[in-house]
Length: 272
Image (tube, rainbow, N blue to C red; front, side, top):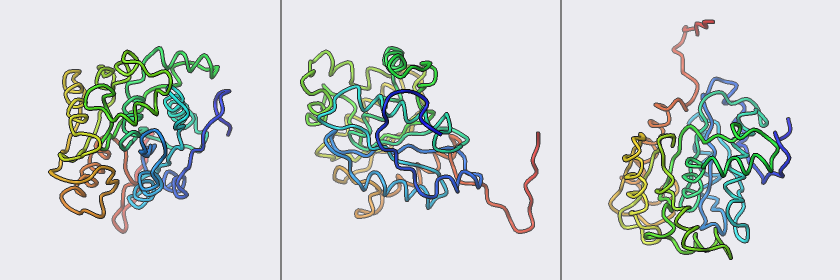
């Protein structure tokens, strides 16, 4: 099946087992957005994450979203389009909630799509030739050591690459995600390390406070130490690696998880 609208798409890399897992009864789908300061995309926060999810029975794929010299709203547009294509079964049927996970600048992008405004969606819908309702926010959002603010304890490189020549204080403020949170923002899972020297932990704290103020459910984990860009954190071990089990449990509570396992001799009873 082809994409639902007119605009060209960036590469969307579906994990090879994603359809098999969905056909086998897995629920939901996770769209992975690697970090890279809006300048590149880190493999250990893309393909490595989808492989981890497949190992845990969860369908996923990662998006090669636009980076510099592309500027706002190109990356945001492509994530909204990718979610619309997933809902329209362009890549196959994936029943259940649609979740996004983003790392660092990819966390800013995930948070931006989770707070995408009516005007952003309407503008994209006009260019795509589709109904703005098809460009809905995701159902769940995971933000890993995310860039949140572009003005307060900001990662300057991400701001510069995202905004390019359009950079103004007013635009940077409007794209600081803690200012975009509203009651319709989906539930969120956040984690950070307290001594992150590249993207200060205040970014996650700002987002958590905004979610609390909007009465949006969230789970926040702050670990004592660990460098920026840890991904699965295999090279540092516990307690930072605890984020993975905490996240999988959170996804399951949100309806995203592997197919139910059956004891020998058990059968599934289907109801209409």
